[in-house]
Structures are given as structure tokens and as C-alpha cells.
Length: 171
Length: 186
Image 1: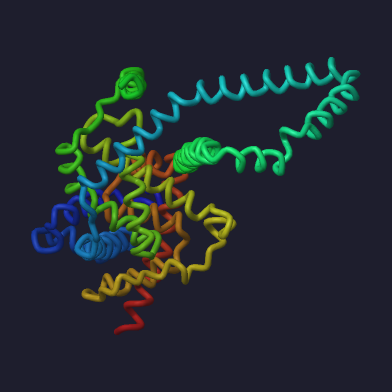
Image 2 (image 1 turned 135 degrees about the vertical axis):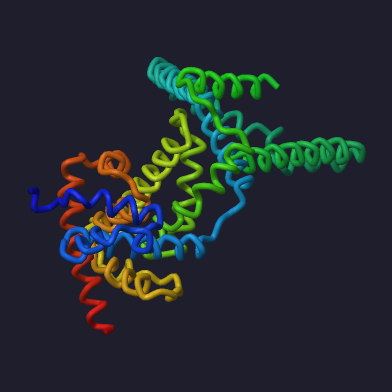
């Protein structure tokens, strides 16, 4: 006989599962359980766990299945969007890399003209048309100009602000 | 419009590839009604924490609904759900704040659902709290859920021969604890 197993254990277990233990059980089997430590152990464990199961089921706090189902659909959809977006994000990364490489190549090829470029930029910056004082004098002499400058500036500010807010909310 | 169409294609394409039969809302609601209490009992008893059991149960159902392949039949679905819950418990215990499932203090798992109706129940709580989490899982699956060794092996990811040995040791230990608790009360 296997020391960790009794041949009548399954019989006892079946009676316990069907709720026929001990009332609807043969007296002979009851005597066996009283004498067999393994079957007595099975009875003790099965009855304890069955009681605990009933009480734990009563204490269960269930959610709405509809809400769970809806959340699962959202999660599924989100995963699908990510799957669709994956190649697009890859293409964007590739394009960015190509652009960066092109910029680096351009800079490297034009490096010897940097001195001329900086000199040209400083000339442009010193030109009178970019000085605020010159601009203000021009505007103040002709009253119509102030509105012509103010309105496009305000419109550009509103448009750029809107774009910034939109991009920030998208992120 | 085009975007929605693409997403729908990805969803149905994935489903067709894995020959999944996604559960509709009504079928899921019925399955949930039949399985949720047992699953909660398993999680609450093994974790010893009803709030954690709530979270893990919700996550288990979300994983179940999001799975690309769900087994056919109620029994297989139920077993699959228990397997997901078991893996979630294991993941929870393995998170950085606790280095290992077996290194956790047993007091963390003391059952605290506030019920103390029967003697057996009142004794089982402290006895289970002294068991290792894996032993609690195996004992619960075997004696509360009536799963066979093969099914427990499938749910826990252990092999069937190990389950036999682990269950033998665990039941001997918990029976000793229950008897000593009974002796202490008498």
C-alpha cells in the first residue's frame, strides 16, 4: 500500500463533494475513516475548505460585468491602435534620422563657408530695417501702419497658441 | 474613418489568425456570474487581502477578455481564468518591493475578511496564514475548487508529479495546524 495514499480516499472525497458525508454514508466507511489517518485528514481538510469557500463566496465584492467588458474593449482597441501606429512611428524615426544625417552632411560640406556666413548674418542684423527704433519711427509717422502690424501679430499669436495647446493635449 | 477601418482590420485579423471566439457582452456577463465568486474566494484566501483580491480579479478578467485565444468550454475557460489569476498573484509578489514569494512574512497573508462564523472557518484562516503562498494556492485549488493534480499543474505551471508531492506535504502540515487549533479550543 502506498503510504501517502489510501484506496478509499476517492470514495470519501466523492461523498464529501456530493454532501452525503457523514449522514448518507455506509457505517463501514465511517469506521474506516475513524481508523485511517489519511481519510480522516481528507475529511478534515475538505470540510474546512468547503466551509471557507461558502463564506468567502458570500463575502465576494463583485463589479459590474458590463463595465469590465467595456474596459476590456477599450484596452483591446488601444492595443490595436498601438499596433497600427508602430510602423508609422518607425517610419517617422527613420525620416528623422535621415534628416539629421542630411543636415550633418550639409554642415560638413559647407563648413569652409562658415566665416562668410557669420559675416553676412552680422551685416543683416545691423541693417536699419531690423532696428526697433527705426521700425517705430516708421509706424508712428503713418497711423494706418500700427493696425496693419498689430492685427497680423495678434492673429499669428492666436494661431500659434492654438497649435501649441492642441499639440500639448494630443501628447 | 480610414483609421477606424484599419483598427477594425487589425482587431479582426488578429482574431482570425488565432481562431479566437471573442465573448460578447451577454456571454461574458453569464460567465462572470458563474465564476467571479469562486475566483474572488481563491484570490482573497491565497492573498489574505480582500482589497488586493478585488484588484487582481478585475485584472484577471481584463486579461481574459483581452486574450487572443480563449479555450472552448466553460470548464476550460474557468481553468484558464484561474491560471491568469495565479500568474497575476505571482507577478504581484515578484514586484521589487518584495523580492520573493517565499520571503514574505506570513502575517501579510493573515486572512482579515471579518467573518468568523464557523469553527472550521475560524481555524482555517490562521492555519492558512502559516502556510507558504504556493501551498495555499495548491490546497485551495485541490480542496475548495476540487481540481485534479493535472488541472492544478496546468493552473500553477508546475508539473503534475511536483503537485502530488507538494500537496501531500501541505495537507499534512495544514491538518496538523487545524488539529492543534482544535485541541487548543477544546
